[in-house]
Amino acid sequence: MKSRYRFLSLVLALMLLLALFAGCQNDAENNEEDDASGNTADVSDNEENNEDADTPEEVEAKTITWLGFEFHNYKYSAAEAEDFETFKAYMDLALNDYKLVIDWEAIDQSAYQTTINGLLASGTLPDSYCGSFFPEDVYNSVYVNGGFAAMDDVLEYAPECAPLFDEGGPLAYAKAWMTMEDGNWYTMRPGNNTANAIDLSNSTLTQRVPVQVHGPYGLAIRQDWLNKLGLAMPTSPEEFQEALVQFNTQDVNGNGANDERYVAHLGTTGVYAGVAQWWGLPSGAMIENPGTGVIEVPQLMEGYKPWLTYMRGLYDDKVLYNNDGGAMWQYSVYCAGNYVSAYTVMNDNLWATETGDPDADYEPMPIIQAVDTIEPRFIAQEAVAGGVGFTFNSEVDLDAAGRFMDFLHSEKYFFLRNYGIEGVAWDWTDDGLIQQYTLSEDQDGYRGAGGLWLDFNAFPDAGIANVWGLNCTTYDSVQDALDAGECYTEKFMTADEWKESVNYNGEGDSPATKFLQYINDYGEENFNPCAVYSFFTPPTSEEVLINSQYRTDLDTYLLEMTTTAITGQISVDEIDEKLQYAYDTLGLQECLDVAQARYNRFLVAMGMDPVEAE
Image (cartoon, rainbow, N blue to C red):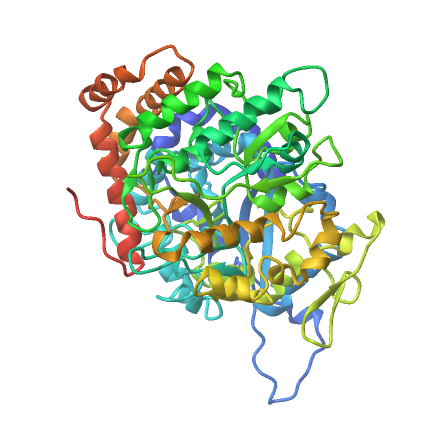
């Protein structure tokens, strides 16, 4: 299989336009090798021949073909890892515990979409592949033409993991996330989940899924720079602006340039992830409110215009640059320049980042209400998420597919992914926890595969700590999390141990713990989190057409409107007229309706009430 797909990945790049022939699936004559006789191998030859009459009948191994990809952002590729003990342990696990042989090939991520489109057109798709790489229209066409195996049918052959997806199960959200209009689901999104979480539900908010213990975060500011200039922690937008101006005009980083600034990702979709929360805006455009379920567009909300005016002031003060910053997660490159006055990120992450200054101390700012009549927000990253979605060909041997699912969701898989080889990379402690050992580089083959080489290449990467984590806990409130010693307990550390591990030079608790305290002080009845992950279900045929007609131009138009207003190229007074144009010409309402319908399907599949149209 490996050499075949390596060749096809080059040849089929010319066949992208044939992708819409989604009905082209494997003919019976192309799949003769997939029948019971051709797709099995008797493994009894590798074991002792026991003639005892009581010996159970030997289960034959089945083969599943898998086409993966590599981003090349990890230290090793899957091919380089084939001699690693963790790789061998994975393949032994698949064969010995699940009687499954994984016949895999991984190609470069940049060629993946073109390759699977070509394989689709030629009717030679493997048993399993990352179908989420299909564009919306192609994915929908494959679904309409019966090209995917239904996941519920696969799970009938996966007795170990099937209960995880039942209503109320830890992975029920993954099934709901991929629910189609017919009520079935056809794509598995492997988890990227944390063991410890907080349910922020209260009398006015029903949380769809819990959030990570360290997931609530707001704006972090250079506390050491505040101390250097004798400034207090800002508690209002005006005080924040004044602090930024003082950092800049007094050259607080001492490099001879007035380059100190708030990196707010102006000009990108990340621009809403910062101080916009003080004006009650969400962290992104066309994303659901995680409590109410309503799809939110910042440009249509009450706080949008006053936020624009404030941001224009920061831009005029030269403490905010255009096209400065990328995604929220790309903080290292900016902070390493030692010019970032403030930044929005998971608070403790900045303590694992090279800032360019050993005395740097980024601390979270409290929740600030910019307008008395507008409730402020805070970003809260969900404790469950999904990786790249993979699918099964409708011609797949369901038994083999079920074994694949059981393998990917097994406890042994999880421990190999997160910890590596027991006895070398880690051992159990007397209190039932994990003791991890310091390994040299030449022992990389014994380390956990996740983040080292496993990258949807030899098989999908499932990191479901909310199923197999050592300390799976969902706290009922922020106060309960604080009482339990978070955000240290999730790391199996005390406060002192955490501070030592990151050489913390701040005062008091960790930044993540401080922000939990800010939230708790703000009051549970006032919780109004912003979502990080969006749980939109796949679009219907009609929804695909609406999105393809409007969505790209609409998103570009709304972002440009925001950017040009902040940089002074248009007036805030022009916003209403420009929004009316978006309604009249760019399908703003139609796209909103599509987004709400897609999210409503998720809510219904989760057993929650859909949002009614106004």
